[in-house]
Each structure stands twice: as structure tokens, then as C-alpha cells.
Amino acid sequence: MERREILEQTREYVRNTLAGEGTGHDWYHVDRVCRLARRLAEEEKGTDLYIVELAALLHDIADWKFHDGDESVGPDRAVEWLSGLDVESDIIDRVVQIIREVSFKGAGVDHRPSTPEGRVVQDADRLDALGAIGIARAFAYGGYRSNPIHDPLQQPRMHETFEEYKRSDGTSINHFYEKLLLLTDRMNTEAAKRFAVERHRYMCDFLERFLEEWDAER
Ligand code: ADP
Ligand code: NI
Image (cartoon, protein in one colour):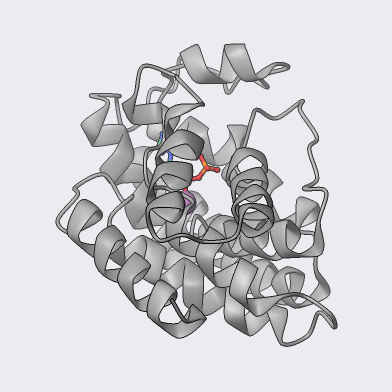
């Protein structure tokens, strides 16, 4: 099968699997990550766009958050899908490695993907957690987990291990301090950093305003 056809069928598969998902990990999240990843890859000489595109499409096909913390379901499902299309095994290996490396694992865990393609996809996924869209997604996911929006008595926690991060269910406002505001400094590529700085500023404005309204100051 031609690469173009493989990409098209994979898009269809992911769209059918994730359309209408309600926690911010839906098909349009994947579609935005693909577009951002392509945009970032333009500035990263030598990244393989085919690998970037396949990995971006499949990166949330079965997230551990929705499978009892099991990190192997996503990679397994991607292998199953790509083998079914007779994709070459070295391509499958590269795509699956990116899916394993892409996810945030806690404030104290620094993990930079090992390939240029992985770094681009991770940046794109993280950009979609920032800015106006990031704010919307944080409250959608917090609502799905039945987490409180905010609780002034709860302090943010800096998770030192992936296990701690996985088990945590704090407030949605604390999620900004525990994860979202840390992402800008951890972007891998210069292009993503540029996008992130603006999205970051927008979130800070939102938080300031939120806390002022909370305190009946405006
Ligand atoms: P990652 O792979 O880094 O976890 P995802 O693409 O799976 O990234 O998406 C994570 C999304 O879910 C982000 O928009 C993030 O804000 C949101 N999210 C994850 N955990 C929480 C939480 N505890 N409270 C609110 N939002 C959360
Ligand atoms: Ni994602």
C-alpha cells in the first residue's frame, strides 16, 4: 500500500475511534496535533514527515488515562493497526517508540524523546494543552474525573515520579501549576517555544483573573 493510502486509512481509523470523545482527547485534538506537528517539522531539518504524521495520528489511540494507567495498550493497538496495513516493521518500531515517549510523566520527571520526530510530536501534543484550547481541555478532563475546579485549601503538588502523577487527582486549577505552566520551558523545538510563550501568557492572565473573581475583587 502507498504511504498516502496508509495515512488516509489511519486518519479514518482514528477519526472513527475518537470522534465525539468528551474529555479533550477526541479526534479534533489529534487533528490539531497533526497540524501543529507538521508546522513544527517545517523548521526542523531532516525530520521524517511520514513518521511524524503516523505518530501524531496514533499518539492517543488508547491513552493510559482511560485504561487503568496501563501504558502498553496504546502502543499495542498502534502495532496491531499498522501491522494490519502491512507497514514495514522498522517504521512501526519508530512510530511506537514515539507513542511511548510522548506523554507527560510528572513535574519532576524530565523525559525528552530520543528522536527528532518524537520531539516534534511531543511539542505539538503539549502545545494543544496550552492557551485557550488548553484551558478548555483542562476543565473538560477535570470534569470527567469529577475533580473540583478549585480549592484554595489544596496546594499544587510537584509529582516526582510517573506513578505519583498517575494516581493524583487534585483540582483543575492546580493542574495548571502541576503541569501546564511547566511545559513552555520544556519545549524541545524553537518553533514550539515561540507558540508556547504566547499561550503561556494567556493562561497566566486567565489564572490571575480567575483568582481575582474568586476573591470577589472584580
Ligand atoms: P499527555 O500525554 O501529556 O498526558 P494528552 O494529550 O493525553 O497529554 O492530554 C492531556 C490533557 O489532559 C491536557 O490538556 C491536560 O490539561 C489534561 N489533563 C490531564 N490531567 C489533568 C488533570 N488532573 N486535571 C485537568 N486536566 C488534566
Ligand atoms: Ni494528546
